[in-house]
Image (cartoon, rainbow, N blue to C red):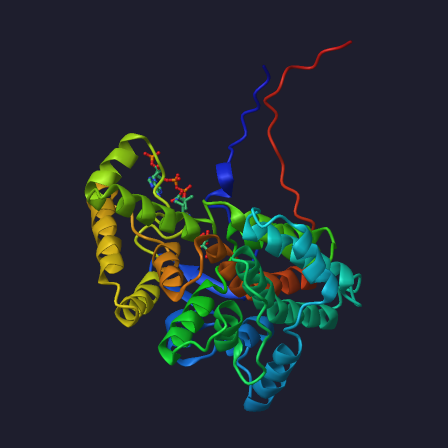
Length: 372
Ligand SMILES: CC(=O)SCCNC(=O)CCNC(=O)[C@H](O)C(C)(C)COP(=O)(O)OP(=O)(O)OC[C@H]1O[C@@H](n2cnc3c(N)ncnc32)[C@H](O)[C@@H]1OP(=O)(O)O
Ligand SMILES: O=C([O-])CC(=O)C(=O)O
């Protein structure tokens, strides 16, 4: 067996592959900046629509720019009939991430500018996907529960309308706020696996929808976005067995299980977004009078800290927050998609503007040369 001796950076851990001006993840100061602004400040003060424009354009919008974008977003919320038809062809037993992935692909095939990857066309595509994805997610959750579709309401902002389309009733202002916070926190995180996937696809000069479709596939896995759903399964398992979180954890670690919602490739001392998301979870647990969920959250967090000194990532508080709001568990990662469309498409545009084909090398460890 031939084995070359180059240094291998498994999982590209620690490898810096390019510049980005979209966001800065700083594990030393435990901070995350979107275009220079701390994400906590944006979450406290801004709407998700404003943050989307910041990520795409590099600057926060003026009032006129925001008004114009809000009108465009509201005008592009309805799904084309063939997107609905494609979703309806999928079994209700399939994972909602499969639905998002298929919908992104069909929306791309429909697009009048499908093969145009100019900056103007890409921004337009990004904004239209941003507007349409909530309808995909809401439509799919409702169809899985046998409920009729709820049409978008033009008098509601992005977050309030998302909740309206999913549940068919107006959400309380504090719920809308917590949802808006989650969308902002999930929006962008430098060269994570799904964003890097989008950049790899873009680097071949493929179109934006192909890159987003690939990114959705990468996000689905439980080591990445799929962890928010997995956290809820953990909580349900602990609740149904009636054991203390510490005892459950001991057993899980003894079986060498990865505990979803904990750990991070970049942050080793805690995820910069967790305190803000945890505060939103606390508000939701008070709003829905579910202190038990918060108790479970803290119990498992302390047990994991004591056993492994591994801290929660954003998926840990986000999962139970979405549960309290009424989203069903398989819908959690699609909510991440709806948010991350902003970061993915900002990176797609950045990659396209300064492109080099992404094609690393490999070292060979197969059989030595042989002949027939
Ligand atoms: C929004 C997001 O996408 S955030 C990430 C969401 N993903 C998860 O929550 C999945 C659970 N977490 C994990 O699997 C990992 O922490 C990852 C994939 C996120 C990061 O992984 P890496 O940087 O590759 O760290 P790695 O997997 O090498 O872990 C280092 C050590 O910590 C342990 N470890 C890390 N995370 C966990 C965890 N969640 N549960 C148990 N052990 C863990 C590993 O087993 C390993 O131990 P070892 O050295 O004894 O083998
Ligand atoms: O950065 C990562 O590797 C994963 C993550 O937290 C994100 O994508 O939000």
